[in-house]
Amino acid sequence: MEFNHYSVLLNETIDNLNISPDGVYVDGTLGGAGHSLEIVKRLEDGRLIGIDRDIDAINAAKERLKGYEDKVTFVKGNFSDVPKILEGLGIDRVDGIVLDLGVSSYQIDNKERGFSYMSEEAPLDMRMDREEELTAEDIVNDYSYDDLCRILKVYGEERFAKNIAKNICREREEKRIKTTGELNKIIDKSIPEKYKRKGGHPSKRSFQALRIELNGELDILEKSLNDMIGLLNNNGIISVITFHSLEDRIVKNVFKENENPCICPTEFPVCACGRVSKGEVVTRKPILPSDLEVEENSRSKSAKLRCFKRCVLEE
Image (tube, rainbow, N blue to C red; front, side):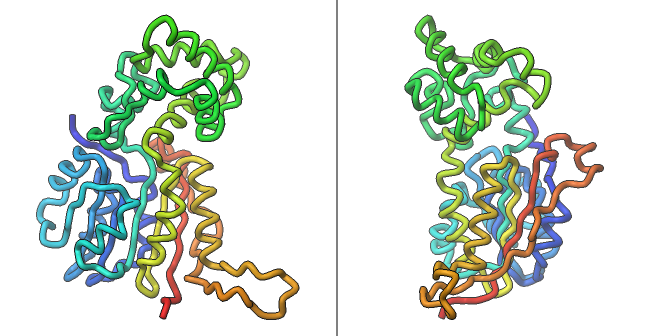
């Protein structure tokens, strides 16, 4: 299956990076390489480090970026590993970082990956990195009732988390839940009919929650953002695209805290805590996709872009 991915907020992301022809850039979520392609097109003596935990994405990106091989270094890994990856490459600081936290269209449309609630007979997989052992099937069948409730409520913001968890536990006593279709049926009967008429597919929030838990997506985000801001050159930009409120809240708060880290009481005449601003938030409000983009790609509807500019380097 061809690795297709519609790069959300592509022009907005690239424009905000202010790409320097001789700069060093990191795409921490390589995916379909849409953002990476636009970056390398603008490089002369510069360099791009493309990172993804999905080997299918790496292989597809190598094909898409043919002709730019001298400007790109491909690394299979997690964006949380950026500091270690750059250190291994002998790079101290970079001029820009892009994170597109969405699941790629390829991953959603490829039934065997198990990300989509629209595929009835797909395996419950959802692994970003298929070399990992734990799958969504393991979570659904082996996690406790309390843990399932927590995951669905916190990561999926699912109001019927208790009903869904209860019915999952009941069904798995009879037989192991193995497919997306089986899980869809359980979720569907756990949600009252009147609440299914709005808010999209009944399984949307639960599938999101399982994917986030399985791949540790929120656990690594806050620390990773702080680490990456620290790796930016002066005037370097980090651009992050999120697709749900939990991610966006983390990005917003991390950027705000890096702009104004002071924890002194408001009555203090001068700062005494010694915490120094690392830069400024470029996007006071998140950049949203245009109506045209949403029309062309409905999956972009919930996307938000936030950018932070490094302005002060530590001595």
